[in-house]
Image (cartoon, rainbow, N blue to C red; front, side, top):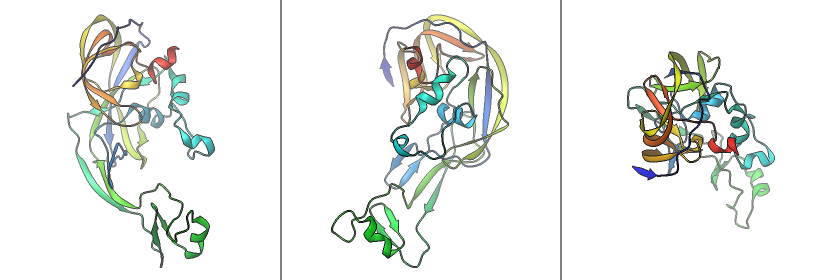
Length: 261
């Protein structure tokens, strides 16, 4: 549990309605949320930035070239959606998530190969061209793991989240590093009601980077994943939005206060 107290701010209602949706994993879902040795763990959630791209709200090139490989472009891709659309990180519909482990092996099937600095060389004649040192086994590293284990979200898991703004939701989306198929189902629609500043408990998951600058976060559990940590079991002080049975901090937008500078 963590405590962070800042001066709360009051904001107007940006959205009139919101939809509670359910995401059903038709295939195993994998995100490299944490990397420990040769094992890559998926946390039991689906981030809202990933969902924004999966829903087609934002686009990024399939391959990043040149300077674009040096940093992500979430701010450029997502901040134009401010005041138009927003989605919360998805939380487990049944309170817990089932996982399974899979092993991958990307070693070459060629007659000859050699393990170098985090890469596999498959042709002897190409090695001198990539050598960076005087020793025979010093070659330019390539950051692609060749073997390891994956902890993935098992198929059949269900998640829920809230969608704000007018948007046509597809029946299926593709998420994760393996572009896994996930079914989208609208459960209910509710109006967004503004609540006065007070202390509230939030049962939904929140993206820490999307909170209104100056929000008073009293207690929460942190899910540390890239590109921004998520909050759950949050108790906060300030203005709030009520959507059906859910109460969340008011003023949520992609990349938070950067939209208001």
